[in-house]
Amino acid sequence: MSDSVVEIENLWFSYGAEPVLEGVSLTVTRGEILGLIGPNGSGKTTLLKVILGLLTPQRGTIRLFGQELRRFRERARVGYVRQRSWDFERNFPASVEELVRLGRVPRLRWGLWSRADTAAVERAMRAVHIEELRARPISELSGGQQQRVFLARVLSQEPELLLLDEPTAAIDPAVEAEFYELLAQLNREQGLTILLVSHDIEAIVKQVTKIACLNRKLLFCGTPQECLASDLLERVYAGRKLVQHQHPWG
Image (cartoon, rainbow, N blue to C red; front, top):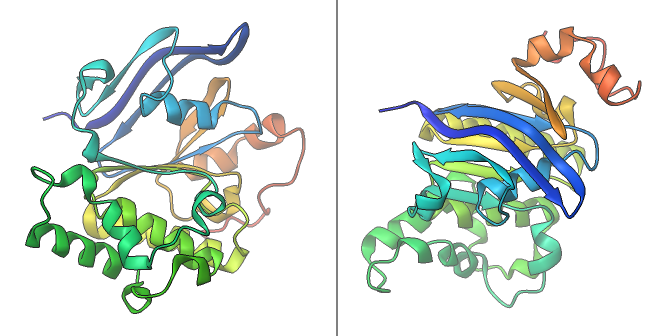
C-alpha cells in the first residue's frame, strides 16, 4: 500500500484568463502535517478546493489514497475545516453535541443512527476536550471553543486526511497556539494526515513536519528547518518579518 495520501502532478488552474496555479506538483504522505504557506492571492485556498473536487483544474492529475480524484468515491475519508466557519454558523440553532453529530452523516448506514455513530461522536468531542460543553448553544461559545466544535464535527466522520484552511483566523494568539498543539496531538495519537493552510508561520512551525510555499507555483517544499534557513521568506514576502531570528524549536 502506498504511503501517499495526496499526489498532485503538474496542476494548472485559472479563473478565466487569470492563472492561479501553475504547474504545481506536491505529495502529502501518510502521517504528515504539511503546512501550506504563501502570500494573499497565492492560490492556497484554490488548491484545497481543487483537492476536494470543488474546482476542476484545466490540466494536471490529483490522486487521493492512490485513486484518481474523478474516480474517488470514499469522501468520508477526507475532512475539511474551512476558513471562518464561525461567520457562517455562529447563530445556528443547535447545541454543541447536535452540531458534532451532523459530521457523522456521511458515515450513516441506510440513514440509520447506530451505537458506533454515537461512540464516534463521543470520541470526537473527547479528542478536542469539549465534552462539558455538549449542551451549550453554539452561539454562546467563544471563537476558540467554536472552532474546536467545528473540528470535532469533522473528526466524528473519522477522516484519514484533514484539510484546514486558515482555521485560526481571528482567534486570539494564545488560543491559536493551543489549537495547533491540538492538531499535532491528533496527528500523533490518531495518525491523522493533515494539510494545513496558515498565514502565521511562527504559529505552525513547531507543529508541522513539512512546509510548502505556494505563490501560484510551488516555490519550496521541505522541513521547517530548511525553510527558515533559506532566504525564501524574505523573497516571497518582500522583506516582511514573519519569523523571529531565534528558531522557535531551539
